[in-house]
Amino acid sequence: MALTENLLLLASILVLCALLVNKFGNRFGAPSLLLFLLLGMLAGADGIGLRFDDYEVAESIGHFAMTIIIFSGGLQTSFKETRPVMWQGLVLSTFGVLLTILLTGGFIFFAARPYTGVIGGSVLTCLLLAAIMSSTDSASVFSILKGKRLHLRENLGPMLELESGSNDPMAYLSTIILVRMITLLKGGGVSTWSAVGSAALLFILQVAIGLAVGFVVGYGAKWLLEKINLDSSALYCILVLSIAFFVSGLATLLKGNSLVALYLSAIMISNRVHIPQKRDVLKFFDGITWLMQLLMFLMLGLLARPSQMKDVALPAVLIGLFMMFVARPASVFVSLLPDRKTSFKAKALVSWVGLKGAGPILFALCPVVAGIEGGADIFNMVFCITLLSLLMQGMTLPPLAKRMNLSYDADPEVNTFGVELPEEVGMLRDHVVVEEDLAEGDTLRDLSLPHGIRVVTVRRNDKFLVPHGSMKLMPGDQLLIIMGDSDD
Image (cartoon, rainbow, N blue to C red; front, side):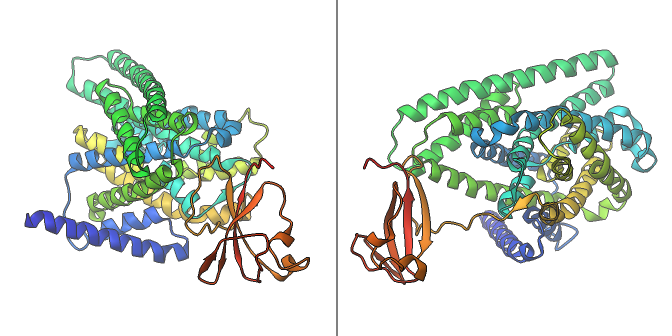
């Protein structure tokens, strides 16, 4: 009992420290997830001495967190916003990932091998390290785009969100296939072609079963959510969360790719299903996703050993720089070669958003758990490359986008005074009354609001007033306005 209480106390202190550090670090433009990683490292065995070295437990916790993060990303993916850039995002998340693996794997084998030790011993091991690092981490991208409220021109925001949300499955699938091939060849008695055939079959089955489970559960969830009538929004949040766990568990049970199934089913639920009190559901997932990201990055930081990274720091930096300045740009420009609408500078910015994060570090646990030679070195190198990426790309992305004139200021956040309405009813907006508004008269009726716009409430100082046509308005009054269809 005491141990459990101590663990809860330590976890609460770490989470509180992470939130405080994040608040301080945001002033300097530091990505939240980088701060969580560094805090975990500071609290770990090479820092204040909290020892955590169970890779299998870390992998299980990480997959649990990724289940929620990927599903939440799918729920927030809008067909309406992503449709204009659908093929670009999907090409980047499939062909772009494979091209990144080949380019980076080739660089490790032919150029960085003298510095990588046992990792550069075979082509498969070099490709494995490249596969682990091949994806653009969805948690990092979502954190920067949404946490920094970064709005990008030329539909780059939806494109990057779609790419980062859908390329984790490709990177993870490539990782487990290469781990399987290395394991089979190491065991002996299996020819190279047999190992390749086994890997190809695994790839086809994982993708096919993942897609099938995603479609089936997505349609099943549509029927369930439209038929069931629950008493509160909290119950709908729990129901949708249980669907996420069911999708992941079913795909794993059937030997399919759970990340593919999760992302596809979440997109179908969000875009094809009428979810009662959907706004509350999305807020719930936004909060729990932040918690999962925070806990996962803290855990991976605890798992890291900076004292063991000095031996792999040089090759890690070389590989990281190659991926940033060669592999990622080449894969982006080649993948988007048929795209004539996206400008050159927009493609250049996409090339710089090859952010690494918890996903690659989590995938790096696979060779360690599988007992592959050099697995610990792979983990340490991936950790170093992730830190380098978050430092260089994560911290420079917002100012770079602004300098390239590819970002714009977001609209001021609407103050709804806590009022929530279904999306079908209309949009809520706020307005502060100024002297010019009262030029034609000082009553609400004198404002002559356009058709379809109604004032819901008026806030004057700390009081809320019920609006009516003859109400006298004063400069500084805050109006909560609903914009929607009207029958008059």
